[in-house]
Amino acid sequence: MKNTDSLNSPWRKDFPALQNFAKQNMVWLDSAATSQKPYPVIETITDYYQQGSANIHRAQYPLAQKITNDFEQVRHKVAQLINAPTDEQIIFTRSTTESINLLAYGLEANLPNTGNIVISGLEHHANLLPWQRLAQRKGLELVILPFTADGIIDLPAAQVMINKRTRLLAVSQMSNVFGTLQPIKQLIQIAKQQGAITVIDGAQGIVHQPTDVQTLDCDFYAFSGHKFYAPEGVGILYGKTEQLAKLQHWQLGGEMVQTATYHSANFYPAPLGFEAGTAAIGSVLGLGAAIDYLNAQDRAAIANHEKTLLTYLMRELTQREGVCILGQPDQSLISFYIKGIHPADLSQLLTEQNIAIRAGQHCCMPLYNSLGLSGSIRISLALYNNQHDLQQFLSALDKAIELLA
Ligand SMILES: Cc1ncc(COP(=O)(O)O)c(C=O)c1O
Image (cartoon, rainbow, N blue to C red; front, side, top):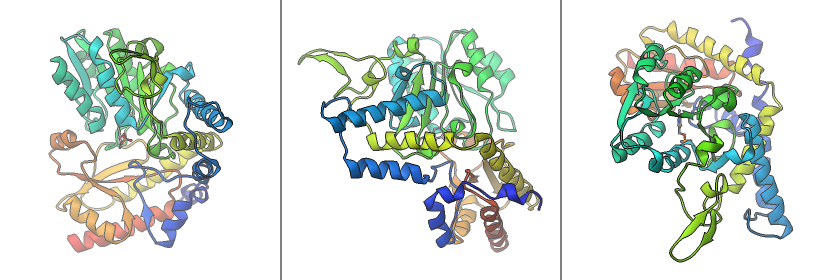
């Protein structure tokens, strides 16, 4: 095998969980579901709880002031990460799922009762079900853009199907099934020509592609911290200022209200008006540490490393009889099945051999139904994976095939 150096990960040592997995002889290949966390993230969270927690935006005492400042610094780091013009355009939610649900409620009052909402056939349930329900509530049509055999949203079809009746387009930046980067810039342009609102689900994309919301020119962009080497419980919603101003407040409660009587209330604008209740403060601070960690690395080298692993894995998989890969993966993620073998059986045997992968429909039930498949095995890679992980997986796969054939 050539190029073995680039198949070893210089980042692996920064992730204690990987050392723990090694002791158990376990291979972690499920980073698209959630990522492991580097030392600085773990240390930041531990510090926050050890040095003292305090609620934000409420109290005057020094600890509360410090934590509020640290929290707001993370908002600034997120804005810089995606090149948002101002920090006020970054809303902290709990996840991508919550960001998209926020939008589906927040946009409802200002959408007309005629026309359509356009998504694609490869969306995760998080970017399908909130729009499906919104379409039902408003009496709008839900239009599904087709995707090609490569696993890419069909642009010529989109050109026709996104039309003057389109009120909103919501698509993902990277498919969590095909591992394909989507032509979101072109899709956003098509939607803009028709005056539609544009929403990007960046849950997978942000991890593997530098993202600039101003270049993309999308109205909204959502992602989750936990796939981005940060803790669970923090999500992000970016919006253009004029679009955020039109959103209806959805969750109501503490610290988002300007004035309240028993019978009426006025709310703050974004971001605070959309952050009702106590935020996941420790997780937000952890997200800041994850951004700092990644900023200190060579992101191009990470992308290169992940691509090299992916290419190696693709080559190895396609050499095995009966292996069918879904689409043409671009980055870090491969879904496949083997003719004549049920994915659940294969997954069981891989699990027994300590390989952590996912089998099933990966929260994309309609996609699998449209392909006529009951599911697939998904391998997802991150910066900490190395050649040894893949070899261990491939040898476990060969044993499983031998047993099941
Ligand atoms: C493409 C995509 N969108 C949305 C989500 C939902 O993310 P979360 O569970 O963090 O809300 C996922 C999670 O796997 C995903 O892969």
